[in-house]
Image (cartoon, rainbow, N blue to C red; front, side):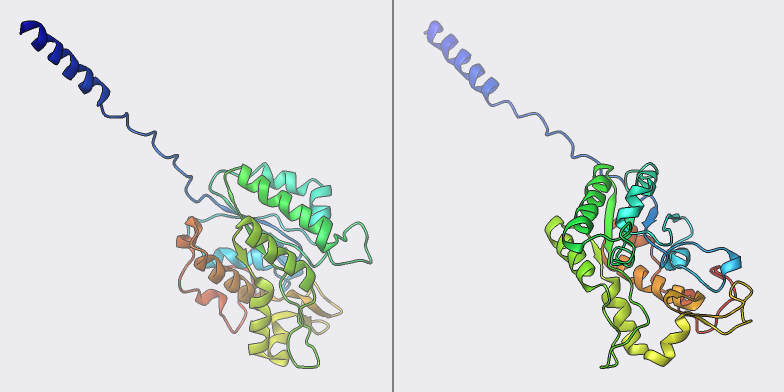
Length: 275
């Protein structure tokens, strides 16, 4: 009897050992919080000095849409396409500054479409697409967030009175890559064209770089430019970008101001500041 009781106790102990609870699973990796915004783009987004006023890039005005602690590193450069941004080492320079949690806004297309300059031209279906894929994977590899931005619209209207989509093929590639790689997208071409249509051809002219001779020291002969922005135009485009960022539900989105009156001004401040 005693032997049987000993055997039963041993069996129970064995069952208890076998039923020991599994160890707690390893904690999920902590994703980085939002860091800063970096901009890879062309002249439509780049920074201009006071000697070029009123010419202003939309990236220059984006800080006016963000809370006080949010940094914008605008590395956009005039005349650059995806091809030359890479070839000149500018992309590598940007990546050297990327930290986990950063957001990289990627807007190209204007110069990629410029066939008259082969050093810039990037075929949308091949070179342009491959370059964008490189941007996406490298930013993600740095544990940062790439955001594709379709090329902003120009002040050019068709016979139907609607703003033209002059970079439709390049925008289409961005939209396709956004879907296939699940990369956030700001369809700035669509947003800016809708804004131009609503504003009208005549009323929207002042948002682009049009000035008579003698109006500004930087343009003594005047200028008529349907691609680049005046101070007010850059503010409006920055507002479109900010509104789209707010709606992307990224860690950054909470740093975008819900109300952005400084970007909706109807009279210029005469400088690129937020106040």
